[in-house]
Length: 547
Image (cartoon, rainbow, N blue to C red; front, top):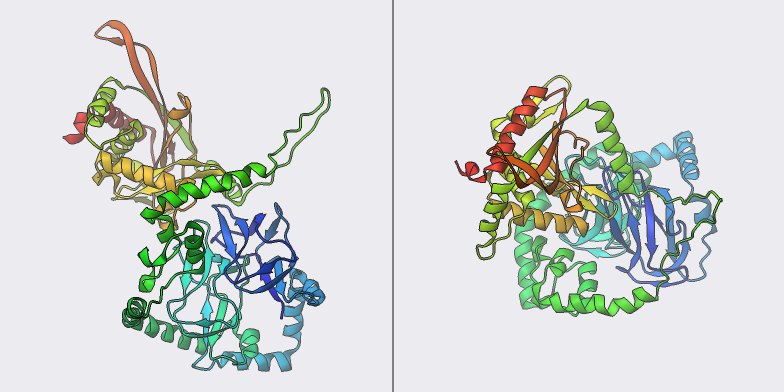
């Protein structure tokens, strides 16, 4: 039987997705766990795995095309199978809405089905779209690891679910057969929407599908209670699972991790799993130390294939002829535009600039970096100094909520990082309590994750102040848009060699300009100026940060 795969909701703000690349073509044979396509959201591009086996009969969204969540992405089934009825109904949102309207009009039969759906047997469990972050309102199924008809054990990874921040593996709390998949790959659905149904093999769940999708008061409570019970028992189950893994030779690993291990020639017996029940997941393969040589060999082997692909051809417009090139906006770019627009037009920005003498900072940094295994950047110095200045000027470390102004007693520094498709802001938590080397190591790690699109949602949440540095690009001075809900953002320019006056004499010096953008609703001009004065003192005399 053919299966419809829909555009998943991979982030809480995702409303549409872009098929960056199809890894399977129409007519190709597909195995469970094969990567079908790469789907781009507003935050990242993620691999989307198939949870079905069969032939790719139809591709509903071509490469580079944008489609809303739940749009028909693909159809998988038996070779030569007639899918005309699915094309007429499954891919058309209006058709589905018409079906919903007609189902509402058919009160006698459908209401009976709905009432039957409310009575969910105790051995059948409805799995709903989980809330994976505090801001998540909807999620997208990036890929299904299990397919309909598969046996599922407690702790097995059902699917990879994408939010606007990251893609996370979602494990099952139940054991049984995967009877129904409610949200297809690539589809987006709100939190608590029916994700799947698990129960005994052969159970008829048609009435649950019809009536249980919207709400099922009694059954929902039963399901949640059972879920909690299973979660409490999971620690006991994990002990048994680890025993069977060591004694019986069974290795718990996600299909994607297995595939990556096969590609890299990694023996899963040598990999330590970080997932529940010591399950090996994607990040364990990526972080596996002995695989370094394999990682180097893989790109080298991939080079010929990459070189064989045609490079983009630059088309130049003839003299005197007007022309435009349209580039589709990525999901990340759309979200950046939306949020920065909201910040710029809702918060009254004003800007304060100071010029800092970097002589002592340069000398002190040189001394610090002469120590073994220590590498501190000027940006690390600015972050540390900003965190300490915020401690003395807490009003800058605040948020406007309308009725109140929230002053944060903790200091979480957001560090703007440029990635290929825009800007992300990983967060250093309790930065004022970190040493320079700790700040440097954390910034390097988070920036690497950002560029590899591996940041988790929690690593980009909770900032109270943000630093943006364009000095490495030679920019001497600029202004930034405040990263809401922060009240201020610091723009750091390049260190410039120029004539300066010292002790009444003109000498060659090095200076750096800092520009503070403030939200006038929370930070008055004098408050911002006092903050910059303290910040300047710390940077010009780094030793004062030790006092």
